[in-house]
Image (cartoon, rainbow, N blue to C red; front, side, top):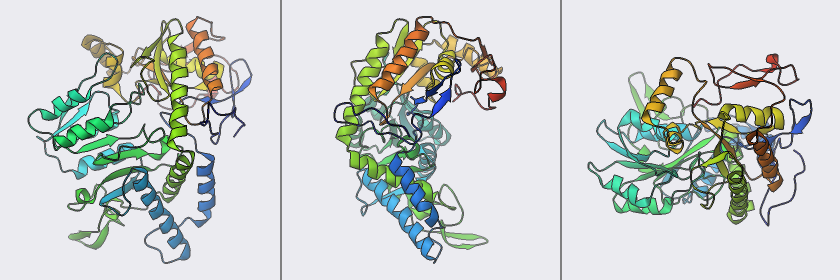
Length: 468
């Protein structure tokens, strides 16, 4: 960790583990790494790293061991479950349960299996969703979509209209915050309207969890620790116990059963029924620590910090010539996140230059939300078909996309200024110090040369970050 400048107003920033690590740049200088990809994954809060370090010596198998360490580990795991329920606005002694899983994607897939939908059952969702809240529903039923407008938003009335169509849907699956535009749907109003129409609601809270309270009235909630400063591989699915009491679980195996014979199984009660196998106890401990630390900081301080950063980031980008913000205008309140394009600069090249020349990490591509981004980019069906044809032929060199910068609890106003200066230089046409070569198979750009950290031998084999 490195020392950071003081708070914006009375709010954070709060340093994270790994902030300010020096990274090599093409001019031969090391620069402190600036992570502006918090919407994808966050580094650990110091309190989270401390909790994990303190727990590791006590790690043991849970629920099955009589040893003292097993008892301690089991208690820590179950305390994390109770903390997750409270974080979601649930009574830990009430009817809802918290299923501990890998991430939001697994949580939604888990729910899609457990709801026992049939091929003719309808799930209403929106074109704004992350793929995690689109693809699982296509496997188990029919989808009815709420469209967005040119700014990438939709109204509560549009959701109500989709819910009122026949046949009546079994579920509304909707995001609480967009990972592409940072837009915050009026989620409390949407949930209330759905309940008036007797439709249960899943809220994808992956982007909400680090920034604002989760929706207390949603029937189901899913979110991930890795986006809220607990990057140790834990997700949560919240829902009523009755949804998990009957039928076989999503995963079958040890820990989910009371009795097994070669031709018979008696499943145990939820939530244990839903958590077959040895769970990620350390991930649960980390999530609990993050929940406690966010509670200590308080939502007023966090949301105040987010609001100031979002205004600074979006207004700064909007003022740059050749830079185009996607999604709602800078006047609309959003998460501290901005997605944009630069005239004449492919998104993959812009991201590569920010990293290699300025030590700034951003995300580029389609952000696991292809339908939404295609709409924000204003692409025609013919253009999308042409891109699809090229990708299916193995050529991702012209894959459409954008650049996303997303801030977190550790981001300072100076960080945003540094980022804006770098984007301004690229948009103004400042030449690259070296030639960048594009790999058509991935769409990524890589600088030519032998600068340490950026030579050909330094290039790791892996998938393009434009995929997804």
